[in-house]
Length: 189
Image (tube, rainbow, N blue to C red; front, side, top):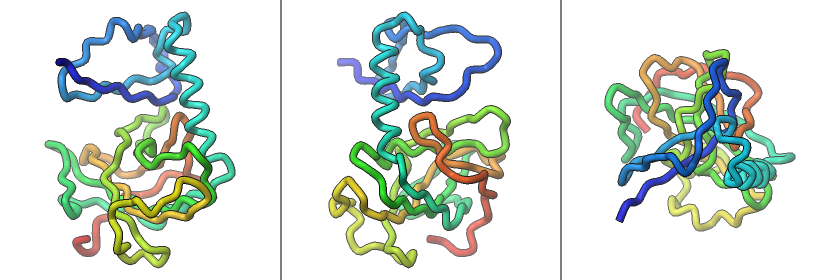
């Protein structure tokens, strides 16, 4: 049985553009394939479904507040380890007043130094915090009810060591007010 996963993001395509057909993807067992929705063939019926899903997911942050408290680089962060040649970037962030459909797994780390947005992926390692930044007693996340909560947490991503500024994206939207400089960690988490 072949199991693969495809994740989608909406970012502006580059100058040379070739459409991708979902039917032609060669998925490998255990690998994730990242595809920009702008690269999908507009005549493919799956493209309309993917774009509709992206709009509905993005609407979960309509009217929400996103506050970045810090962005730090690490070699290790609790149980998280970086990919080979990468570092970990821990984003201490709060989300407030979000709506049904918002999912933390969809929050992507975006390179904040490039003219064209480049995503380093979503589905970050998550460490839940209390409002004051201390460690939350329940790390399961089961206490989140899905709407209008305020949640503060570390989202921890693996990114190339050269990344110096980052932002956050969600289903094709940049969701922070500016790029944030990645600071060295002052102490281990």
